[in-house]
Image 1 (cartoon, rainbow over the protein chains, first blue to last red):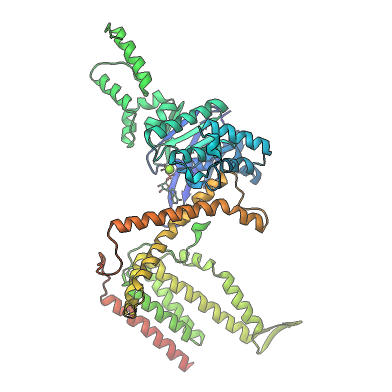
Image 2: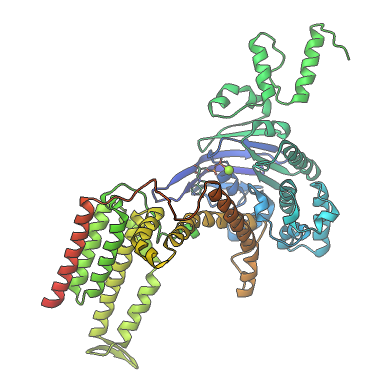
Length: 290
Length: 266
Ligand SMILES: Nc1ncnc2c1ncn2[C@@H]1O[C@H](COP(=O)(O)OP(=O)(O)O)[C@@H](O)[C@H]1O
Ligand SMILES: [Mg+2]
């Protein structure tokens, strides 16, 4: 059974005013447990609106959402429980930090869940380790940390609740390449460690290509496709028309193909490209020095 | 939610009312308030309502919006009418133990309700049809004679402009922070007074932090563009007045006269 399922999910902002805007339109999707889904789409395509429905923060204008087979709006209790089942990290999550110490801020979510003190302590320390926050930093004021560190603390705050589904809205926005890789790395680690389902929103194909097992493409308030990365990047032309970029390495391989060197169609990360390229050269009998 | 507050909201459009010079609109609003308070009988108030109805029609603001704005003053309306109905002496229509309802009481409260409705809908038309920035510009110019007596009119107007400009931003930010904390399981809706006050901490602290950050950024940005206060400052958009503004003002003065005339003959 799919862990996330939506039926004709539609949401309209400011209904009944001149600012009325249909942000998502009849979304139907089923996401299996354990996937790491990259959600891509250009700004304004409805990504943030969509994910805020999954933990019950926005109530659909029409349509239904099932988490683990339960309609999350069936009663008040279920809606509240969904908040703990589905963890949502907003864009620029460091702006929600408020406690005196990093430790306390990470503990805020678990505390709201009503866990015992030992359990909270265990989770805070485990999660801090996972996102590479040292014990010493745990006792610091969060406002003394660097941007990237703050971001990791804020993400840890949601991870510490151990949600079955973890959703992150543009977790890499505004970070340098190194900070970006580090965050993506930590997210992949969490996915592996806790076997949870992870949804990662981004407008950068490059980021998503690195870690996703499935890709969901959104355009103009609708879902264009939901498939494995090779298949999605195979539609390079359509994706380019939506104003999205495919990974640079995929572009290189597509260009090579046009020139008559058909190496592979499913290349979207550099290490994989290297492997394919080497075996291709091998096949053609080209010898490389070391 | 916070977004549902419509009083004081600007409603973009291109009607004749939108295009009037904001300085005239402020003056006309003043005239309007004056004649509402001058009105001593129902004829005067009905005439005031006619004025509002005409302006609403001309401004092309959906009637629904006007009614929506009314919702927030319902408590005020109920409060004043209760006071009037029960505490005005006169010809008794109905009595039960110590409660008395008089004909005069009923009349006065109906009169007050109509007056409040007129007042709120008429004045909110000013903000519905004028963008906050032009409104403060107009206020600055109307008050500029006070600069002669060393009143910091420009600074005051600039502060107002900035405040108005950042209200929507802060509302949006509050919404965002509230959602983020709710996603972390913060309970904002249940519990007693103390618990609720405590639940505000995770919202207020990030909000203050971000307000200060924005203030600093804005100050730096203004300095970078050489903002030095009022002295020698020119405007991109000069306020212009023309025939239609004088006609509108004349019309509102005519209404004022008629109301006073009604006071005399009825
Ligand atoms: N709070 C809001 N009020 C009104 N319209 C909104 C709001 N948030 C988003 N929108 C509109 O909904 C559409 C989808 O926005 P969003 O879900 O934020 O897209 P994305 O996250 O893909 O950039 C956009 O056109 C945006 O302008
Ligand atoms: Mg977004």
